[in-house]
Length: 120
Image (cartoon, rainbow, N blue to C red; front, side, top):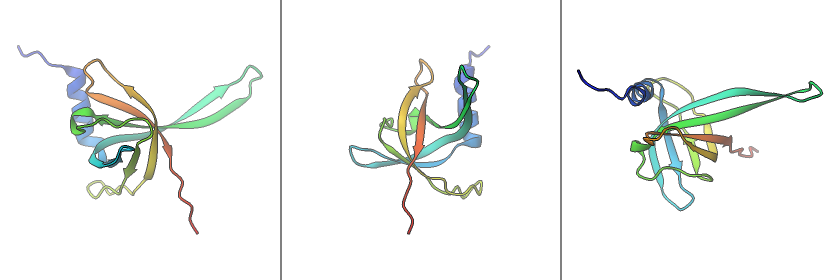
């Protein structure tokens, strides 16, 4: 009977199905292309006075093996259009937080902030 590392296998299957192309621009210089799993979810905070504050959190997961140098806080991620899935370009984001998922360091999760570009 073969021994499987099920969480790792699931991450790879999910990336093969859902990840889209990304390009990381490092603060130290240079760029690296790879794949990332992009997601935005709602976050609601209820105060003691029962006031609800709504916000959103945008995250990007990468497979570390696809990046010789794992991106860090302050690096920029560009998410272009995906010709395979037909998804439109999502623009540029700055990494504001880095969170390794597991002890194997297979996947790293980044919290992102949209980089606004002024349009004339």
